[in-house]
Length: 133
Image 1 (cartoon, rainbow, N blue to C red):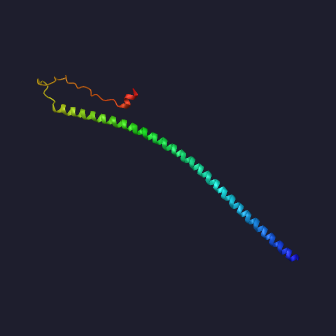
Image 2 (tube, one colour):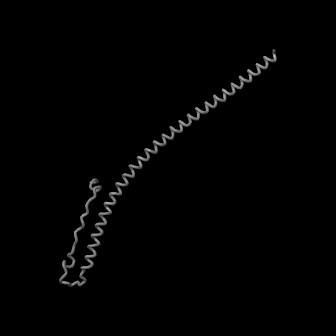
Image 3 (spheres, rainbow, N blue to C red):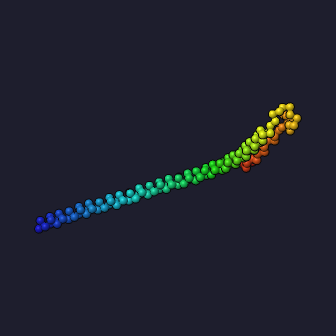
């Protein structure tokens, strides 16, 4: 009878120790899984923070780009005005060079020598210059 009891006791101890070991394994595996989930949640929170920072930076850069485009439009208008002025001055110079009289004592010269003058070209002020006044 004692051999049966010892055998039962051995089976009980073996079964109990196996159950405890299995339970410990399951417990640590579940604990590790929850820790991994918490770590992923923290990473997602950090990523969402980085994402919102990137969104703010994109908005800032969009505003900056818009201001640069505005400045470029003003510069384009100024350049167009200068190009028109240059075209007029070149035309006036060509006309003057074609009609120059090299005969100093010429009596047919109109206007007389030293009396020719041109008006200063009138430049339109751009809207940007009007705003600053």
